[in-house]
Length: 444
Image (cartoon, rainbow, N blue to C red; front, side):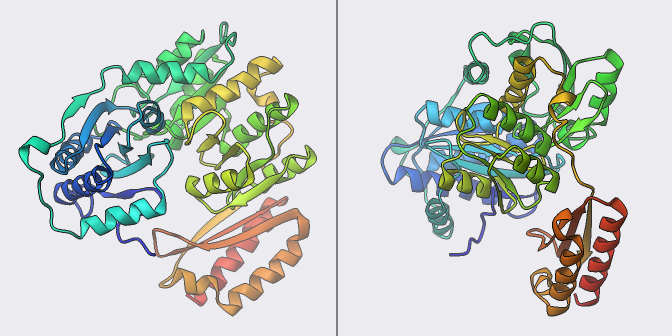
């Protein structure tokens, strides 16, 4: 069944506009409370990032949940993966995250986890949607849910992150710069890396409700690059606003994206016989990653874009490691969702164990030149299937052979057709992408 409200990762939009407004989110909280309270006494926890709108949305969600007869625990600003972890360990029935991830402050969203810290199953999302269409009614006063604050949430999550490293693992002697994007990791990430022994410098740790992801964090690593070079740090780590994505910067200021970090983790685990199968990437993972894994005899599979689909493939295959170029990395032997802090620790374990600098650990992988062109069309899905474009793609794929690849896909959020070409020759890649974009535009 198609969803009316839920996207691939909860509900997201511009604050103040439907559905991210107080009226809808009050009803959403009530619907969620009704679904979980219908199965018995329910406990739901809520976390958020540092957006100013988080306070407004938190209060209406809390009210709706309470009106449905379910109890609520609030934890204030905490990373998305912390909510997943605490939902599981506190034996809560569900977890809610108020965040729009790497988006600007004027956007926000509502994401959900089940009692095991996984994304909600489709059938539960459909139950919530069905409940949203019902008349909202408050339970009697004696059955109202109670609200409490989790004052130890921060410490619990910090200890969990540290515990994902071996007991004797230490970062003593390492100088690290953290960019917390003025987001949800600002008060936990510095403590994690300091307590692991690193000398930590920080930027992006002064949230004011409106500076989240603003010129900083994993979507804007320029400040981090400058800081790493300025203080001659060993490396830098950039998180996004809700703490589920990570990029890193080597000592020379070069940015390592999610593909490169995935390569570091995977090859280290392979060397230690702890890889447990292969690696799941996405259709957007760089072709250079696929070729590098082939040379290492590491199985690699491409899922659709989105951590939900990466997770599905990992579970189906019994593998534990996957991720996206954006830095959303899944270490499912350690946690149930993308966790930027945990992923960064896994990279640092490889650095320490192998006694090499970060840039040395990616020398076995060469990213191929990539060109992406977004073509504005009225019907992206229809245009992607038209005969003229299919023929043009087939011709260019023959030209590239095994030296590259072509991906043409409709955007899931905008009236755009995304034309992506990768290959060994930068000029050839750009020319092919431009030609295919022209064909798409003329038939869109």
